[in-house]
Length: 242
Ligand code: F6R
Image (cartoon, rainbow, N blue to C red; front, side, top):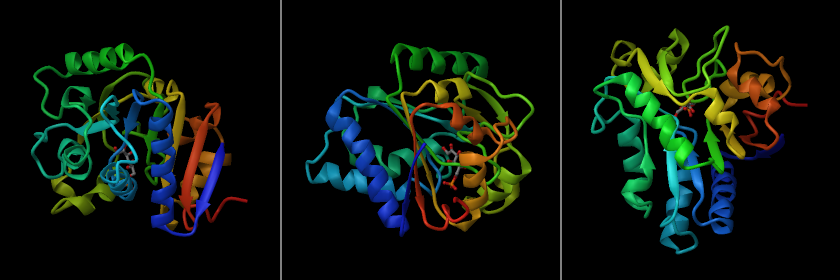
């Protein structure tokens, strides 16, 4: 793993955006795996800025988002579809038809999971997968468990994730209990992984990700098996690393 520890959230966002931008400059038709949550917000803002300054062009880029809450329509303000449009897609030029986000209200969930995986396979490879990490070690919504799924699937969110994500909703009762998530296989098959973390509450999970036991109970620890992982952390998130 290559680890970058930056002094502030802003510097961390600039570093992550530069890594994604370099990928697109080197390969304009890159396939990006994208995450939501609070951590990558600054990175998206930097990428939008670079696009406005004509330093990057997303015309040939294709994207796959990691996850979506089940039961939320795309125009629900807490849906990840809405988040991506607000923070990124409506501000850059990724063609609509190149944007893939799991549906929150599919007619048939099994078919939706299968067709998401088919679309990923048709894209051939994810060049760079952006990840955040839950305090419990989840990546995407692959929650700690005694076994993990490789393909896109429905997840029952853990109490810790519901509590943690309740900050975006009126109360924990409003947080959807289920989500649809890309599986560990699709994440691990990405050519490169860029994992971002910010804040002291992520320090312990980052220590486990980098040097803890490799266990499905901490899904992020499986990244130790991936040949090309870049960690971009602020100093609080990196504070338990040697
Ligand atoms: C979101 C996602 C989640 C988040 C994680 C951290 O698409 O896949 O794994 O990355 O829950 O969320 P934040 O960044 O809000 O701490």
